[in-house]
Amino acid sequence: MEMFKYPIYVTQPLTPNILEVTKEIEQVLESKWLTNFGNKHELLVEELKNYLEVGHLSLFNNGTSALTLGLKALELTGEVITTPFTFPATVQALDWNNLTPVFCDVEKNSLNINPDKIEEKITGKTSAILAVHVFGNPCNVEKIQQIADKYNLKVIYDGAHAFGAQYKGESLANFGDMTMFSFHATKLFNTIEGGALVYPDNRLAEKLRVLTNFGLSSPEKVEVSGFNGKMNEIQAVIGLGNLRVLEEERKNRERIRQTYVGEFTKIPGIRIITNRKKRESSYQYFVIEIDEDEFGISRDKLHYGLKSYNIFTRRYFYPLCSEFHWYRDLDSAKRKNLPIAWEKVNQVLTLPFYGGLEDEKIKIVCDAIKEIQFKNAL
Ligand SMILES: *Cc1c(COP(=O)(O)O)cnc(C)c1O
View 1 (cartoon, rainbow, N blue to C red):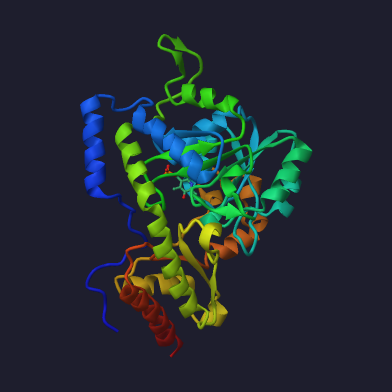
View 2 (cartoon, protein in one colour; view 1 turned 135 degrees about the horizontal axis):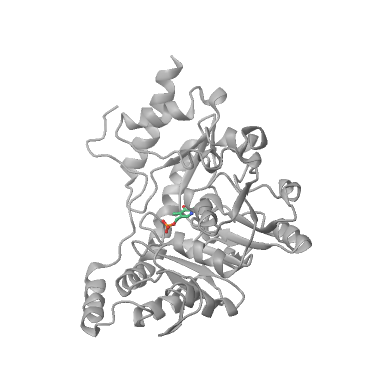
């Protein structure tokens, strides 16, 4: 098979209409109000509240600072039960709040935290559950809430992959005490760098505004130790522009999803992890799982094999967060306590997935997978 002349990457950022945003950037620059809760910032807050169907939303300069400040606003202490199968930022936000992660194993199908394993992790020091809607597939939000209610714990969702996803016809953003979204360039909806928190408790709005602005509650009063987490006006302009092209991107990604699904259901040993559609899906990633026995070769062999075709996939999330050297000695981080996470971390592969991925390229990706499988089986 012919190798790609040009590399194919796992994603390509969504970008707005250049003429439209150029005009808006001119307005911002002429106004001389470049950051600190300006006009575009406030407009984006309103539009995102509509889109996500939530009551309260705060913007940040990135998703990690959103989560870090969100945890601080909730005044958590001691231990937080979380998942090892996530991006480093999830647990690093705990570190910056002096909170100890207690790792809990994941579910086989969704790869999200397994609610049936949470209760045994709860101690007198537990203050919250920090769960992740991995690849946009919703956590078992009902069971998690039941446990949280029983033990009086807060529930925070890292929804970095779940922008726009629904659960039983309702916005997934409306579950838990708080949900974080990342608007990094690689996320479906982006502001280049950026993030948001949504939450049902309106008292958090003012608290978060103070925390993102150095703890300043008025020009000369420093109320708490915050930091600089503000989204600037140019980021907000990019966000407003990307919201206008978002539905088209989602439609394109649905078409690509269907093509992949059509191809992969014919190949034994491939399970599709991100198979939700329309408003159920965030269209953040297209992720497959390789069963080595059935497929014939391992996930790693496929990953490196595709690289030789100039096709770049990602082993999200590898390694597990429980393997970071500063956590490894925690009892909850031990491999024997996380059997499913350890199994899945070696099976999961994120494939190229973005609206601009042409049909011919999707076909080449699929043909390359089949060819690598066939060659290795010989
Ligand atoms: C992208 C991502 C983050 C971090 O968001 P940033 O906006 O890049 O800081 C956190 N958690 C998960 C699961 C992510 O994928």
